[in-house]
Amino acid sequence: MKKFIELPYLGFGIGLRPKHFKDFLDHSPAIDWLEIISENFMFDGSRALYFLDQIRERYRVVPHGVSLSIGSSDDLDWDYLERLKNLVARVNPPWFSDHLCWSQHKGAHMHNLLPLPYTPKVADYVAGRIRMVQDFIGKPFIIENVSSYVEFTGSTMPEWEFLTRVAEKADCGILLDVNNVFVSASNHHFDAHTYFNAVPPERVIQYHVAGHRDKGTFLFDSHDQTIRDEVWSLYRDVIPRFGEVSLLIERDDHIPPLADLVDELNIARQIYENIVSPAISHT
Amino acid sequence: MKTLSPLPLATPEAPAELRALQTWFAQAVTLPASTDKAQAAARLSDQYLTASQTMSPRERLDVYVSDYWSRCMDSLAEDFPGLLHLLGGKLAFQGYLEKYLMAYPSRTYTLYHLGEKLHEFMLQNYREPNRDMVLDDIAYEWARVWALIAPTSTPFDPAPFSPAQQSKLAEIPLTFQPSVTLLELGCDVRPLRLAKENPALPPPQKTALIVYRQNHNVCNMLIDPSFLTLLKMLQSGKTLSEASPLTAALLTPKQSAKLLKQVSNWFQTAVSEGWLSQPVF
Image: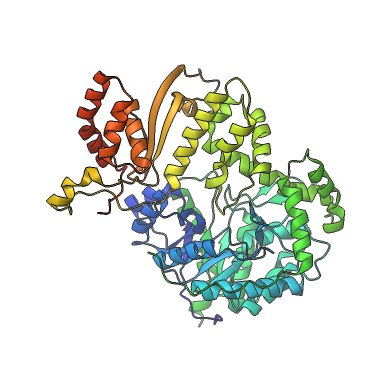
């Protein structure tokens, strides 16, 4: 699968969290790459940066933001972007990422990934902002689909068309969160495969997989437990369509010992190899 | 580590309907549900949101409302566990903190700064009998958060100083690392944040405390009140030569003589603990 831009395949990674800083330094576990929450490393003198500087000597690290607020009607926050640019310069990743959402309004931050109304006008607005961010940071940007719990009456297109339009107009990559698609598909009653089949394969650079909670009337993207079989099953289904795509497991709450996450990562690796290896042996 | 960047460009104009939707959504999510404005915003759910097969528009909106408040409250409770005890538990804590967040909504992209204005808010709004202890506790707990996230300046290092520069150290303004907070408290509030439930309240006792970061960890140290006075003068821009006699003048002759003898030792402590920045001659 030829991608829209030449970027390295990173393999199978996990999100780096403070609980595991020392594990990485003491044991250097066999994990291909790490993702960091950008904002946690944007303080000049923080303890997190001290560990990051040592860990990045051993692992490829990619910054993943939660507060870019690319879909906000506020102006872009240039102070934030300056700090992000410094972080990107520090870790020299192949790309950086954030979410297709908004989290800030009139200067107030809501500390959440809030969904957007899906219209061509909003897609083009967001795409314009992504282009500015990408130019300013000077690295390829990939945008992630979020889980959502509401749908707006003003939306005129499905989420997958919105995501595709944003990525193509912005000329950026896509971070396809398999769990988020599963959660949103359940909450909004669409077929997850319809979503995946509409996303342009050449733009999908990275996957996220994570755990979610069943709240009875809706699914909640909690990142606080192991990945459910249904999500692994979807991952298995999408591999042939998107080809070689770097995968990352996210865990943000009830964080288990690192060895448990490595076990989960090995499930992903096994699924991928079971799908891809037979194909390779026949070529 | 700073890199030069091109001048920012003007951001594209947001579609009017997006601006209107986000104004509504932000009000509905970030105002406490008991307020008239939040209730009015929630009544517009049907206009902006569709129902799902299992949830009404209002119920779907409430997912974001409860997520916002639990995220903010969890973060504040993590940063101010002592305050949670002092206010009488979770419900009272939430009551005050809801009003605080209305007055001072989060203005930065990280939750670390959420409690930055809490001291100012409680100073204006908290009138209960334990007011002084509450304010002391907030000052201490915020100093701990600040010590974690404050920037670093070049640490004090006498090695490159020439003999002439060393002899002038007492004559130049000394600056502190940004992470340092000097606290003069009415009691030692430190045990409150470590307690599990209903902690014993600390007795009234003048407490001089310094909170700082050392080797990427948050530290604190009880110090002699005279030392605190001296450090505060240094922090205000006085030189060591100016501050020492001024501090001594506030004391009895006996205390004053003791202080002047101790200044050199204290200075060594300030250097070894990493409180000072490298001076500019």
